[in-house]
Length: 132
Image (cartoon, rainbow, N blue to C red; front, side):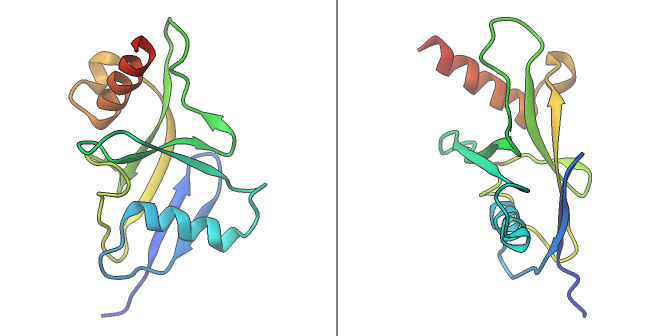
């Protein structure tokens, strides 16, 4: 079987193919995508640890940050998908298969649409941090 690698795409930004390795997670994929570009001015990202249940999640790509600091809607967050399906774990806990397509999208948080999702958990975590 021929390896095809993993594709890392940022909606509205770069789309990079990186080599896949056994046990590779989404964090390794985005780090390898950064390595392929070699220019932090072209592709930057930031990670935040959300605790042992959620793991690491992207909070910034190319200087566009999650917007959870205001006290009113709308809130926007980086969400990631594997093969078009919203991820259910942080990027460090999402193991990839050869040929997977990882997408990062800056999405508006809509409580009814995102109830029970990782994006909802991310929103709850951030709001709890603001109340501390």
